Length: 318
Image 1 (cartoon, helix red, strand yellow):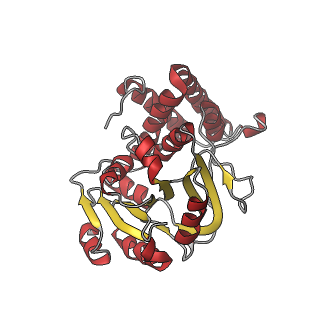
Image 2 (tube, rainbow, N blue to C red):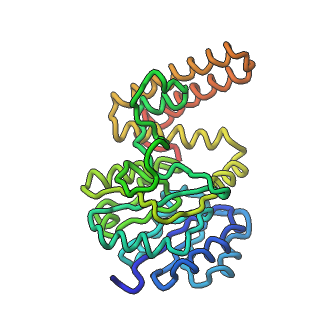
């Protein structure tokens, strides 16, 4: 194995205060294995660019004039890769001292593994969804409406009822710690630039598996993921959860059209509408107030609006 086999890829957006502890954890892990630090700042409004110069002066830093989204920002770094592997790491994810050694050793020993993820825990030690099933129109509907008891055996996206102590193949992995073989990137690429936020890793893992590699959950090291810091920054800048929701709705539409075809997209739209009716009925029966019913209407209206704005989920709005 090369002495410096891995490039670390980081996309930062308004998380200046996390840069020092995140890079400190990386250096404690095994800086001798790191070929380069590659960072994109996605038009932060805090002092992230200045802080990066102090925290990691050796990093290659690309500073965008506008926020181009998580996937496109990562794609900007592909031309600068040097090593055998690329590690995508969120600024709110902190590796353990053994994370690099164990995951790189596993990848070296298992050439069929294209993407590797690890056990994720919150700051209080709570287990986070670390190994996920692909979304489908049905399991997204069931997840939103809470009707799981009527669909026994259905694999839910964030299913937690499985063995977290064993290495296992899975559908897709969260992008906060996302170790990818360089050969995969050369043949499959990285993220579809049409996804501004959300579904980038889902789509990528699907393409990786279709190309013949495995996507693997590796539980023998833990990364602390405090979660959502970049999304919170988006919410602050874009005036809130409604905007974040629109990102997710749009990416969901693009994904289902791409991987489930027109029929799958039509089924998704039917189930979105039905799901909002179910949730509105629940709100009415449980006397949650008019605001809860209006929220269902706004979600349904936003989804149909984005369907048309994306030309039936064939192109992004951004």
